[in-house]
Length: 93
Image (cartoon, rainbow, N blue to C red; front, side, top):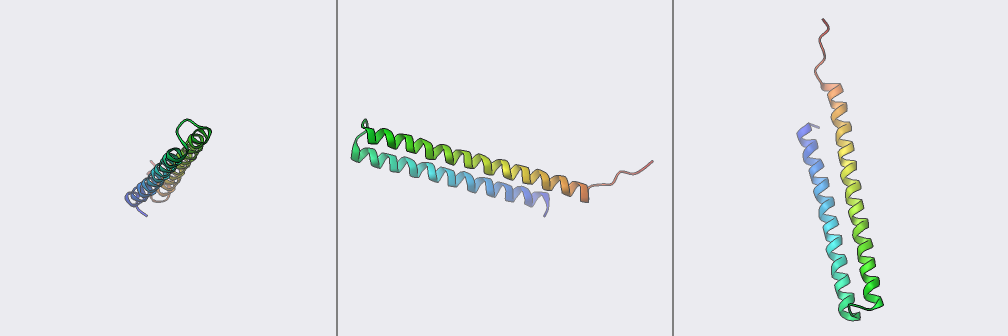
């Protein structure tokens, strides 16, 4: 796999993870708004819904970061290995 294709796949994975995280966040917000519209903004149920929404968003954000770091690490390992295998050999003097 060439370095250009590796970068392209890396970007696809990161973009997909980011899109999925945004979808989860928007879904959590929508569910929270729905609960609040039925139960009211200031009540115990509304506060519990806020806490749950924050929790879901934080888990999604953390997962997105983990995916990004995993992709970066895998990419660096691949680049390092391909440089060792296919890199220019030093000429001995």
